[in-house]
Image 1 (cartoon, rainbow, N blue to C red):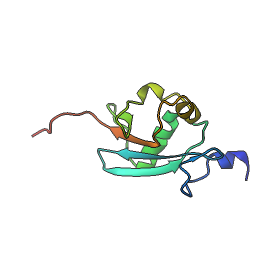
Image 2: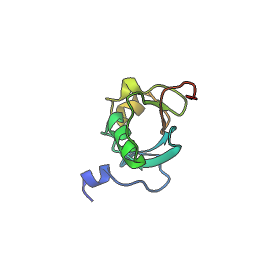
Image 3: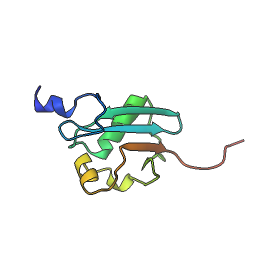
Length: 108
């Protein structure tokens, strides 16, 4: 298998953090109550992973959507960082992200 194929190896196994293949990430889309899981390359940016999550979810991005860790940390400032940078710089330890929209009351 060539390096490009290894970088994009599909999810598999229970390795959450595989140095050879990249991290296995989970994205929860709160509005649609869906979750997807897939592996990304260490060289992929968080923005690339977020875009892939929308594609796998079959959802369109809304202008007011935000990306957070499952602990509620806003990841918007780090969308340009690669996965390697995020984890090496300890911006997050979590491999779980949540796509949230605006908060507010229900329209009646």
